[in-house]
Image (cartoon, rainbow over all chains, first blue to last red):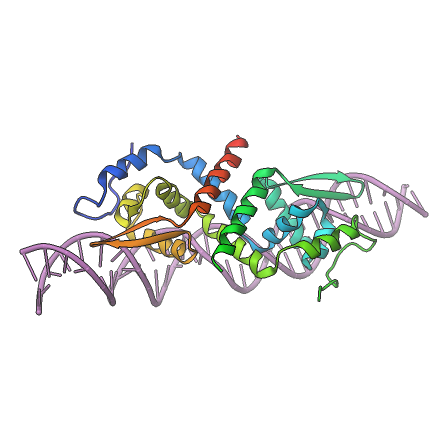
Length: 121
Length: 121
DNA sequence: TCATCGCATGAGTCAATATTCATATGATAA
DNA sequence: TTATCATATGAATATTGACTCATGCGATGA
C-alpha cells in the first residue's frame, strides 16, 4: 500500500498522472538502498584514490600505503569497507594480500564518472 | 614532489616497480576529489530515490514529495545538493519548478550500478 | 619454536551531514 | 496590492563515519 498522506501541494500536483506512473515503475526500496550504499562507498576521497590505483594494477596493502602516503591502519580500514561492499577482492600471496577491482562494472563506473566531472570543467 | 616518507613495509614492497608506474599514471588529486564528491552525492538513500524517480520522468518538487512520502523541506534540501553537484537540472514552469537528470552520464551510472548490485544477489 | 613482518581490527575522537522546524522568497491570482 | 501557494533556506539536532592509537593475528624464516 502506497502512503499518500505525505505533505505535498494542496492543489492537484503538476503531473498527478506521472506520479502514479513513476510509483509503479520505480525499483523496490531494498534495491535502491543497495545502490545508494554502493555509491556511498565509492564516494570517499581515500577510497577513490585506492580504486584509481587498483584500476591500474593489482597491489598489496603496503603498495597502497606507499602510494597514498597514509598510515597502514587507515588503508586497511578502507579496504575492509571496499571488500564488504564487494567493490574490491583480495587474495593472499605469501605474507602479502593482493587487492584488485572486483569486476568490470566498478571500472566502468569510474570511467563514466570521470567523463562526467571532466565535462564540467 | 611525491612524498615517500609514509609508513609502509620495511622490506621492498611486493611490487616497487608497479608502485612507481601507478604513481605516474594515476589522475590528479583534484580530479579524484571531484569524482569522489560525485559518488558521495549519489550515495544517499533519499537522493537515490529522487534520482530513480527523475530517471523515469521530469517532475516538480511536490510530485517528488508525494512519491518519496517525505516532508517538502527535506526534499528541497536534497535537490539543492543534487543541483550544486550538477546531477540534476531545474526549470521553472509557473509556480512549479521541474527537475530532471542533468545528462546521460547520470542515467548510465545508475544503470550500471543496478547491474552490479543485482549481480550480487 | 620464536621473533618478525604484513595486515586486520576495536575503541575513541572529531568532523561531516541528513532531517526537522520555523520562516523567507517569489510568483500567481483575486 | 494582497493573500496564497510552491519552493528555498537557516539553525539546531542527531547520526554517521573517517582517522589514530594500540594491539591482535597469521604466516614466514631463522
